Length: 305
Image (cartoon, rainbow, N blue to C red; front, top):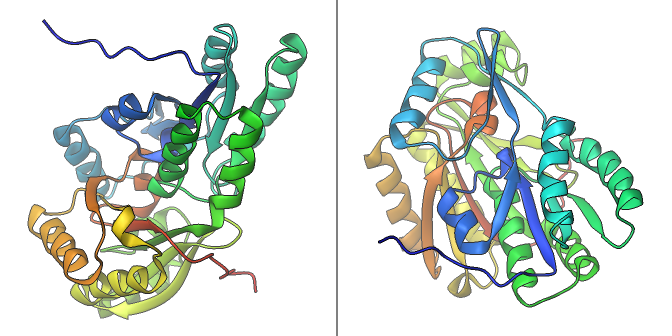
């Protein structure tokens, strides 16, 4: 007989979205829920579920490897209404950790709905936080918020603390090919062609305003792995007491193991978590991308500077 995990009803429910790349296991562990964005392939719209199997992950990225383009849409207002109302009617306040507003309009949609719902339920509070991050950068903030909710902090207190943490999330990502970024309009076709030809691998970060920015470029796959580990080693603070997250877009197991070993040899972290880059970020960044995440120095780089 399977065990059913029972939670004490907290005063605050933490909600995120499909962009967070939290697995069902992590969401169950920390009592987090999420609102689903959508993917669009050949005119068909599908919910961007994070409950996908390794086989489904491989199938998704194989579609992209074949040259077909997958696009994405933000969380529909109906989906936000379904998720928010569920917990408001249960007597809980809500803190929603959203994908960066530089990458999705979801946080703006959520904010408008939250204002409406708080008028209908004046005893309830809803805070919508622009995480300034995506993928596990957003997911890490959701986990931290859930830990605060576990301590029975109020929605106001959680909102204040998580808002202050947004710029200490350090993300370093590299892609195997520039093709997906070209299809998504992130790089010019000529740049992608010559970049692929010369083996150029951009190092991408979430910058100070939440944009995904090409921070620097290196040549070669192995050098890109070394560079992202070096950058995280330089920026991470108190690694002994935190988890370093590796997320990848259907990379070969040997590459993931190699990156994990490289991190272990350079960064004395408590543990390493390995997961997949989900369908929302994956649709624009493409197969075989890999990103690492940790908490550290404040991010000050701004592409617009």
